[in-house]
View 1 (cartoon, helix red, strand yellow):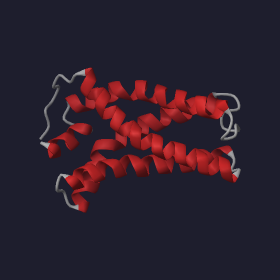
View 2 (spheres, one colour):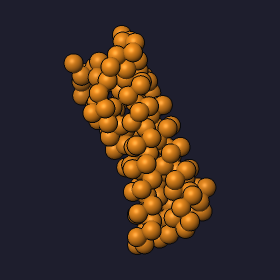
View 3 (cartoon, one colour):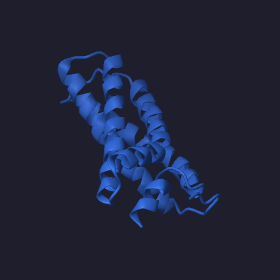
View 4 (cartoon, one colour):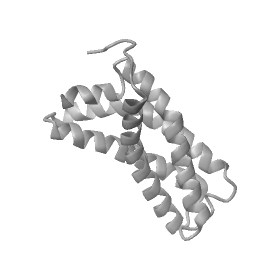
Length: 151
């Protein structure tokens, strides 16, 4: 059920974005750690980070709605509907940031630049994605789809 132009609090939008960010951050960090430890170049590092961000982002939503009683097929549909736009916006934002910080992708796991750039990129992604989620929830899209299964 869609609720067009419903007023959505910034708190609700931030909560939805934080949920999405959690999955994305797990994937991003794991991807960066794997690729950096393996000595991969920038393109494969970004690729594995993005793939894992989507995997964990969708996975957290699927786990949540499966616990609410949805079948695996239903959970996949809900996760795709709820998270795709949010994850895409988040990934574009955070990967753009980390790719433009000089030396960030080349920094080792023990260097502060690596972790600082990654944290900054995720923070900026959160700030950029929160208004997107607010609009989507207000239109009955995005995380509004998930919330319909929790009540």
